[in-house]
Image 1 (tube, rainbow, N blue to C red):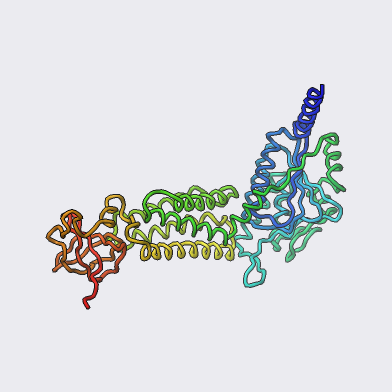
Image 2: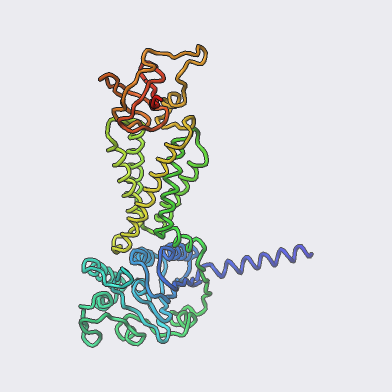
Length: 448
């Protein structure tokens, strides 16, 4: 009997929980503080879950000073595309990007003393704040207007929140940015009423009996804010590239490759989720990696590093385009450039260090065919004597040896492979092994 009673209690509890989140409920999402990349994932998941649950509506409670414009644009698109009615609750303030999110909702309610507006884009530079250039203001103004028109609101009022040159008789004069109070918003069609809380919104919408399901902010949303910051992006780029470089140089596939792929995957996944990275970024990345691989394994000694440089530029473009939205400011662009440049520079420096410091027997630059040449011996083990007519000949590196390149011997250019992994052009070299189609060389030590 006790087991049956426990079973019935569990059934009732599960049924109650399902009923609370099932059709006819209203989901509540809260956007407070700065609007960032985590806000995008939070709204996308919350509104998607509410639509799947058959919710009657979703209330988005706003208490924000604004935030990133690119995040606000993506969040605005998510709200417009929501499969259920959306209701904005301006709980005290919805400035800048917050105003765009409110206008994107089907309905808007204000808490007493609530305000909305002051949405001109600004940049933080040299410790100060300045307005964005006209190009960005114009694009943002049209974005606000189009959003207002979609929801049947006066687009001129939305434009006045962005551009101080817009004037509206009886509301705002030219030269000032528009910020609507609760009463002004109600008078000019940007509010559906002033309420004390969520219960009054439900009553005003005629769904007073609907249950309210809060959708809390997840740890993932905060993690995305962190992962898409410029300094963490620089760390992921550095670790990713260093891991792949080390994997190419050390035989087998192991920890460096796994770490490198994981870091790059985390970088692109996080920027994809928040709507920054696109497929063009991935194409840049793959094109850059292919160019670098061709430089290392195919064109070494013949392209003077052009393929490698092109690969680095393409890699940089892949990372850079993943970090910025269409209306990013100069400060954001500078941070992205610094992050990408720092990541690539450290990775290249690490590669040079590995080439010059890693034991020769562990290097495998040059692919499968060259692996034996690099780790081979200059003497036949069984006969204990040099093999080939070229062994012992002294010449000069006609190109950089990385490790493949060309050597000059008495005016004759031949393809060579360097035992040490890397030698500069002009270095005096000596042939240590002759296999006919391939000559293995090393730096000739100065005679004492």
